[in-house]
Image 1 (cartoon, rainbow, N blue to C red):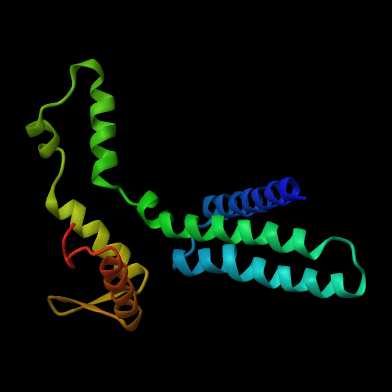
Image 2 (image 1 turned 90 degrees about the horizontal axis):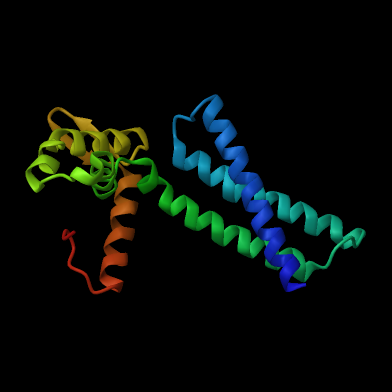
Length: 170
């Protein structure tokens, strides 16, 4: 039963991930994170409730199997949603590795790597993402937090404190 739960949870995740990729290839949604939450969490949760409801009247599977498979699925989905923004963004560390890879055996000097980056590109893309996801908004020459941005900042602060890390440090 444990193996079946494991396989079922992974297969469900891969199926939803494939659906995610297909949808993104056809048309990327305006608010990606909200859409990911709906696609990976809300829709499957409603489906799980529906299956549990049907299972009450006509037992076609073991509820423990169903629950454990979906628990694994939801765990994988939460991990995916959490890492999606970082994977989607042009992370400087990954870009550095890519630049060095493209240089092959010749390698790159520290100065050559630094010259490949501009602060405006690194910051501008992140600010645009935050505006698009409605975490911040621009008013005159200032960038301000939305209510959603305040919630995210509070979560970030609690997360940093839990690990004993200073706020605002990298």
